[in-house]
Image (cartoon, rainbow, N blue to C red; front, side):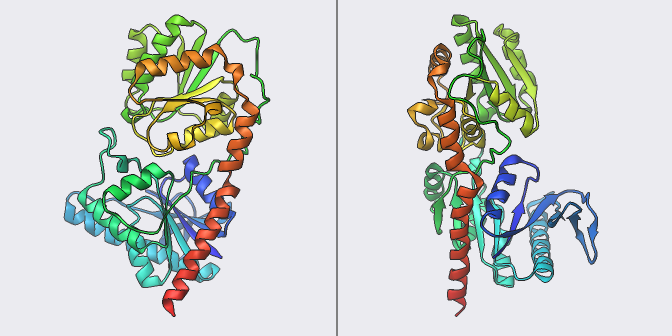
Length: 386
């Protein structure tokens, strides 16, 4: 079985993990969107370039031409045509394409692809905009219209949590939906011992990983951390990520006199994030809006207890031995959870947390679900063609 996986954010860990999960289900040819081609161009297809180290990985040159709604629709139609041409090229080189798998509701180009090429498609939906929070504006009327058509024609629409499925349903959108949690490739994470790494250390290290944007609630986290650290001076916090809120958050930390115990580490490669997780005592994320954030799942795969908010799918996967769930925007509750974990970080069985998470979220586990979905897509398409 051959599947074309279309990647909108090449290099982002969560998309790479979905590609790896697909690779456990089928032969995968990957199309990665890019503004500029950086690999050798494909002869006869100037919008495609081939990875010199992976012959089944291609860049596809995209463009966004949106000075007005009309021109935006024109650019959408032109890009959809380019995707169809790319899939035709792949089919001509490697053999028939059985399924196309893309992410997010803006993959509307799949509708015409199915109609013109006769290839069924699968969509993974995990865009936070469906949660309708002020930090993540909901889809536009045009986006909802396209999502309606996209979902209705999909062999399967995968949502990463039940909360997201319910939110999509509240818009009156229908389709063949299934819930599958995000995969996490933990191959680069050290498997921890049951005990804390360094029981003699005189600090308690918290780590948080996310882009520095209002949806992630770092302003709430810093307020809570300042309150908790006044009671327990052992607390330390490393914030990994960057974004437009960074200067504002650094000023907040200075104003609350915790700049000396909060480190803004900026963006870090996944290998460095894995190292930071391995030397920390707990993970914390104060999100205002999420579906099922990969950062929480990665922390569990590294064996860390997690403190996070009751948004999106977090409540669906949290259990008492995995950490604490607190109300979003509740600074006092978050500070109490920080104090509770700091009081007894050794109470969490890091080895158990990591083993359970890796079994549940491993690419091969998600890949087994994708294989079933892909085969069902092919069978349904063949039955409909009879």
